[in-house]
Length: 388
Image 1 (cartoon, one colour):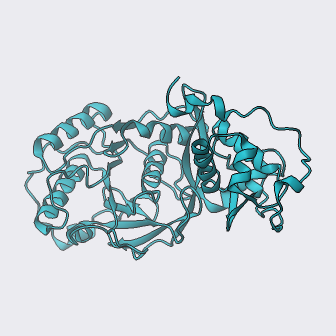
Image 2: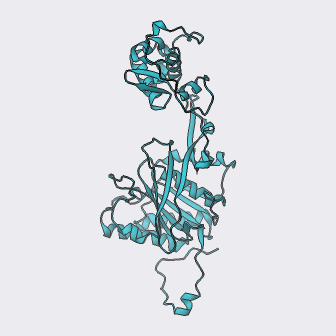
Image 3: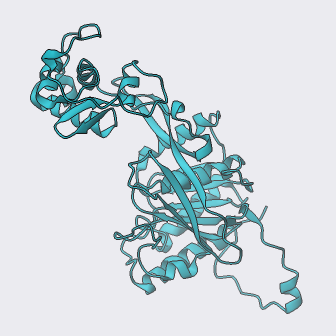
């Protein structure tokens, strides 16, 4: 293993051709994706999954586990969490639980951003790394995100971004680690893969990976595409297609399920393996009330009366059930989907088609086939408003 370089301001060396030709061939931190000691940028739109991908890269290198089927060079990892803070805990827990391990010794996390362009802040980071991983170099440092680690700098100014790039290069030189910077696309990005700010970032980077979706599906639904838009000295890797799979990581103090996601190849994602998000009790009662209409579209008023919920609570639950895909709205009518049936235990898991679309019939014509509803919970559900 290499050791930390004492200073960035070390004398440079002029190489002869023979010395250049004798230099070792490139080594990969991730086979075909990220070179050892390289400057990488992983970028995408907000909520697109880029931080899940960055964490997956980091924990794969720290554990020595293949990253999406590609070999890695294992080593220490330092992850700067500039966004999300303590929320990173459940993402780490989801990854560990999915891969059946309890912890990874050589991974370290900062729960606050590091102003990498400020020498005092950068030197403190380097000292913390030196203390945490000793004189052996870390394999990877992740700055998530550029914006939070560049407060006061102007992303649109080439001069400012040049200073940021130089700061990243100092960290790379001193530690020998690859650095991945997590960044955003422009606001008007329509999938074209244009990163925000000055082109100086792209000019300095060795590798750039665009994390994006090709549909408007809300995460974690739909595939996540990783497209390599720059690979400085090598052929760009083929597009990687992943998906976010939900993982239950425990319960909160009120007994509600805590979930996060891991990124997996789409072939490893199965509908049956994705557990539905926990619903409030009142929403389940509202969902079951709709099941008494037996596949016929019910207007909101009749559904509300069947649920026994106050109008404000009913409207909140109705919007939740439609948004989560348990209920379908057509015109003024509402009907259970297969996911809604499955949630109630009335349809097999994995069914994707909705109930046959029947013309609306008033509820008074229907003969319930299910056991009667329990007393409405909504009338005594004040705890959901935040009071106990």
